[in-house]
Amino acid sequence: MMDYVLPLRWEDDAGLEELTAYLRTLSRHVRIIVVDGSPSPLFERHAVAWDGLATHVRPASELRFANGKVNGVTTGMRLARAEHVVIADDDVRYDQPALARVEALLADADLVRPQNHFWPLPWHARWDTARSLLNRSLGADYPGTFGVRRSFFIEMGGYDGDVLFENLELIRTVRAHGGRELRPLDLYVRRLPPEAARFWDQRVRQAYDDLAQPARMALFLSVLPAVGLCLARRRHGLLGAGAALAVGLAEAGRRRAGGRRVYPATAALFAPVWILERATCSWLALAAALGGGVPYAGRRLRTAAHSPRSLRQAAGSGSLVARKPVDLCEPSQNGLTEERPHLHSATVARPGGMGTPS
Image 1 (cartoon, rainbow, N blue to C red):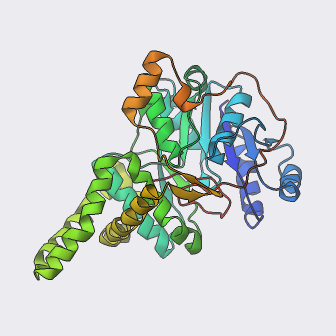
Image 2 (cartoon, rainbow, N blue to C red):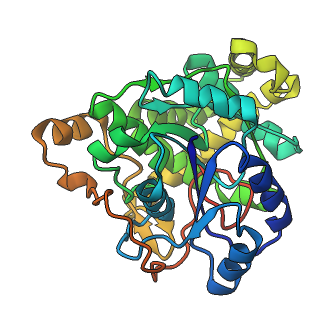
Image 3 (spheres, helix red, strand yellow):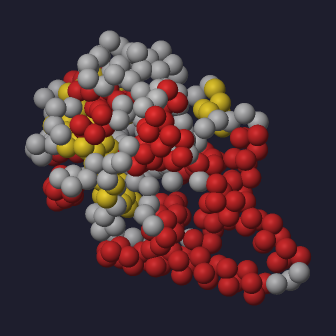
């Protein structure tokens, strides 16, 4: 049986009933470890609600990563007993076939990277789905969940949590240590959409993630100057052609690996809007970087994710100081870090949830 690690930190219990129902169904198929950084009254309520469904603990008190999700993941991996572990944000909703597929793929991989899709689909979920489709058209999207081989995770010493784009950091760390990553484009896992306010709140932070991918960041920084130049020269046809290209790319991503069954056709139409949004927010993210980093839980986080080269060098030399690995072999549940709650750069369903950048 696999283990399922769910890191979360909530500021209210608006979704408690729904998540409890999900955990009840999930517990038939996996052992659940909920690493809960919620304030004490909520933590105690969760302990009662999830008694018998999950191992429910606080993040290990000695873990002080700026990105609170990594504290939760690391604590959960310490407590996991199975070789195959699913790590999932609190808005991810697996069904049994998807779990079975992840477990089967982990027989030949160290990291499995499913593809998320939103359901239900309010307007802002369709907008954000355009991002997923564009990512899929050229590669794969960044999900809010992974399948991980625990022995490999322990051997590589975990991953650095003092970064904003923690999921990319995990992917790159696995690759740097010679791990095998599988990206099954037809493995779809449902994700709950965020509230609209949360969606807007995360625009600049998601754009800041692109600082870890310089070519991608440069592309988005070039969009607004190009649009301005076309408008100044009245080259409206070029703008129309660019919008059509964006829609076409998104539609190609939607059609890959049977994606039409989970991604709505209308989402591809949001691609030009999403590109303009990301182009605008990329300049704001760059300004934040020049100012010392993006505001994050009362501090500024400068690093989106470490470069593949720096991670390979650290792995090859055996010097992992840059990633600040922790001892994963001895579980510790001595209490919750005293730091303020951390909001992550992914679009997630709850204000206090932990999610995945893109």
